[in-house]
Image (cartoon, rainbow, N blue to C red):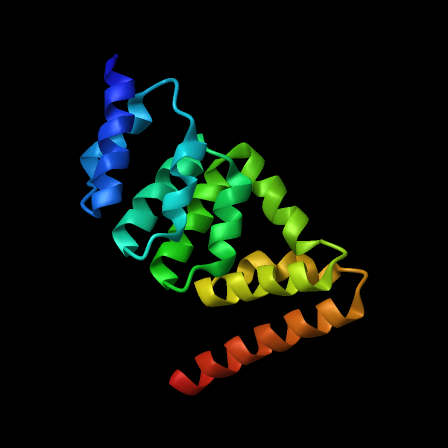
Length: 155
């Protein structure tokens, strides 16, 4: 068993125990042959740190669709922002986010918009202002107006 395989086994065992560390993730990410899908189940862990570390691995080496699916349900704002950043670093990730935001299915599109709202990333929603769907345009404008109003009241 080589270094990479040992790193993966050790990291997964530590995640099972809820005691994974950044060092273990770095070791996994150094490995050339990493099946990131092995870490997808940890995206739904009760432990925030385990979810964060699994998201980092899946974002770099795994199926980006699974990371986006986990991001749609993530409640922790900091982790959600990190997930979006890791998705954005993956070449396939940007395409997947675009698919979510421009989906014909209003439920998927609404969930994606809500994900960006929770992350506090309204600039990512600006392309939707040019959507053909008037309800989407109105919702984005309303959200951007609310954001500006909240900002103005704090000053």
